[in-house]
Image (tube, rainbow, N blue to C red; front, top):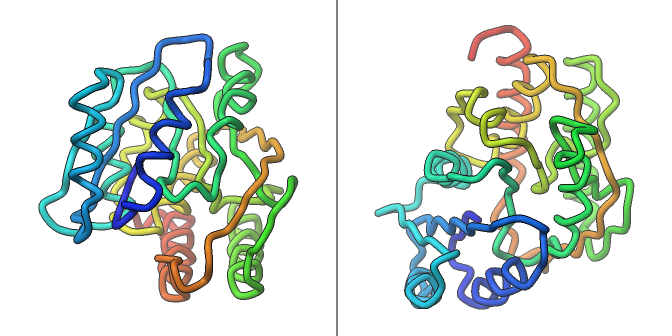
Length: 223
């Protein structure tokens, strides 16, 4: 769970993840990305009282991708799922997304916002996501609907085999591209998505440009 200045939601996000019965042991790795509010203090307070929660911190803001890569290095479980701390994605959906992995029906599962219910998403971000999807599908000959989704689930071994290098939001495109290039078939399932207010979004148009550039470089084997 990467987190940057999420003091308003971080405690609820962790609690909601912990309250779900996944049918297996759980560890929650929260990586604070150099927050300037009291996100880190809240994380440490929770982890000091609950052994299932482990808190880590970047000395300065290094990006979502860096935090995801750091968290994956520290993960000790069999399966890994990325959960944002802003609660745009309801953690209760993880249980259904995890089922095909546990039952051996898929090696990678994505929760697709565009196959399910999406609320409050601005036209700019909707169009941006659609453009990135078209770009990805054209480059890698796939028919995915949501390559930028936060909900990407796979075994820890699969994630580590990707040898990820992105530090920013372009990590989403890198993960998808390397999964496809490594021969993994991605199973998409519908999810509900409730976008936060536009002024609170941390991703911008430039991040979309960098994501597209990352996809192209990976297609051309330049990364």
